[in-house]
Amino acid sequence: MKFLAAPLVLSLVLSGLLQSAKRLPVEELMPAAEDTVAADTLTHSYTSISAIGDLMCHSTQYKYVATGDGHYDFTPCFSAIAPVLKMADLCVGNLETTLAGRSRPYSGYPQFNTPDDYVVYLKEAGIDFLVTANNHSNDTGEKGIRRTLQVIDSVGFYHTGTFGSEEERNAPQLLELNGIKVCILAYTYGTNGFELPAGKPWLVNQIDSALIRQDVRQARAQGAEVIITFMHWGTEYSRKPDSYQEKVATWCVDAGADIILGSHPHVLQPAGRYITRNAAVDTGFIAWSMGNFISNQRDRYTYEGIVWHIGIEKELATGKIRIADLSYTPTWVYRGTLPDHQVHIVYSARDTLPEWMPAGMWKELDNSALHTAALMENLNGIIFEP
Ligand SMILES: [Zn+2]
Image (cartoon, helix red, strand yellow):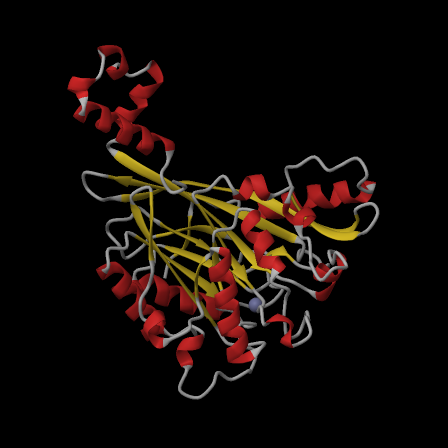
C-alpha cells in the first residue's frame, strides 16, 4: 500500500461503500467532515519523490561499524535522517559502489567493494530506488555488476543504470505512484577506464544522446507521464555545472526528460526549473549535482548534501502534470566519535545536534545550511534554457 496516498485510499474506500450502499446503515455512508477533502482529490492525484546524491562507502565507513562477527551495523549512520527519507512515496539515490561479496577483500577508494549490509541499512533508512550507473559501476568487473544487482534485488530495491542482460536494459521500468506513471533512467559519463567486456555495452548505461532519446521515447510509449534522467556527470568538486553537463542536459531535454537529477561532483550545484519539450508538464526540474549523501570525504563542501522533495500533481481530467512543490532538506555528515567509537552520521542541517557533539560541529552544521541556501536561491526560477 506504500504507493497509495491516504486521500486516494479514502476515495477507494468511499467508492466501495457507495457500491454496496443498500447493505449499509445510513450513518456509515455519511462522510465525516474531514472526508470532504476526497471530493477535491478526485480531480488530481499527487505523489512525492525524494532524491539524494552519492551513497559512497569509503573503507573507514564500514570499518567503523564492523561488529566483529562479520557484520556491519550502519544503523547510527542513517537513524537521524531516516524520518526525512521516509516522508516521500519514493526515495532515489546513487549507489556509488559494488557488492562483489567476500570472494575479494572489501575495499574503498579507488575500487569499491562494499559489504552487503550497507544496502540493507540503506533500505531500512527509507531509500527505495538505487541508481547503479556511475564511474564505479565496473570497479569489480562483470561479476561485481551482476552480484550487486542480485543483492539489491534480494533486499527489495527498485533500480536502474546497470543490467544483467540486453533485454533488461532495453525495457525501461515504470513505477505507478498514486496513479502517476514515473520512469527513472540513469547514465554515466564513464567507468574510470575499466572497459566493459566486449559485446556487453548494455551492462552499464553510458551517456549517449541516441540511447537517451531511444529510452525516453520507449518509456513515453509505455505510458510514462514523468520521466527522470539521473545523470552521473560533471567536474569533481566544482560547485557549478560545466559545459559537458550543459550539453548532456540539452540532450535530455530534447529527448523529453521532465526531471534531470545529477550526481558525481561530490559537492552540491544549483537547482531550478527549465522549460520542457513536453507540453503535458508545466516545467522541468534540474538539480545539477546533489553532492554526497554519505562519504568519508572531508574536503570543503563534500560533507554537505541534500534531500530533494519533489511534489508532482496530475490533473485527472487532462493528464496535465505540474511540479507542484519543490523544497529540500540540507544534510551534513558528521565524522567523529559516537562517543565511544568512530562513526559517520548523516544529519539534517535543520536538526538539533546531540549534547555530546563538539561545539565546533554546530558551526559546521549551520554553515552547511547557509552554503546550500545560497546555491538554491533561484529554485523556482528558470535556471536552464537549452
Ligand atoms: Zn562518481
